[in-house]
Length: 144
Length: 122
Image (tube, rainbow over all chains, first blue to last red; front, side):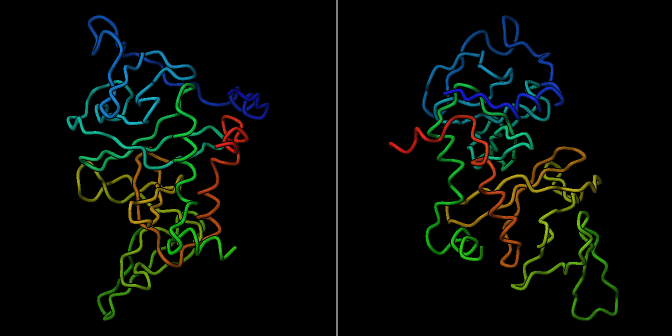
């Protein structure tokens, strides 16, 4: 469901270009082909529309804690599951997924890909607003 | 977040100046828990290192980027260090600026990457 966004198109001209992918997941690399999601066992192809650094399942948004600071460096020794905990937005409106490792608690941010499940993304973005009636959302809404 | 507590401060109340808005904030919240971000603008300072587990030496300013919700319903503020891009999460205090909190929570919905009208039928 693409939507032409003129402000974002203008902002993307000035923005820092995406980090060059110097780690190739091809023959001789880390994996030769698709990867299987650890949560929903979906076979995920490597090339994602809109991003060169796919690190999460487009269906359930689960990721694995394999990279440390640079995408694709495979420097983390944790190998734990990373659960999407929240949605952030860049100043130009681009959505970022915040993952948290269920094993060690490390946080990481990744841009959403073009084929990510829109329902899962919107459910994640709406999670702070679905208050249980006693939480922070209710008191914050009542204060406005 | 450098705590300035003197030796004759018998109450143990320290303060720190916010790195973004300059507000002088007490280092302890009203419920006794240590405070790590400014209640007015929610900015913090990068003083702990999650990987090493001890004190870090970055001391960069950390800006709030997102709201995460725990299973208990409590809100956590996700901070990102503007200097080294490290991410941390901290619990929300009761006296945090709720306008800023709510603005961060609805921030992704202001510019959705796809039209949200399609979800009205669900």
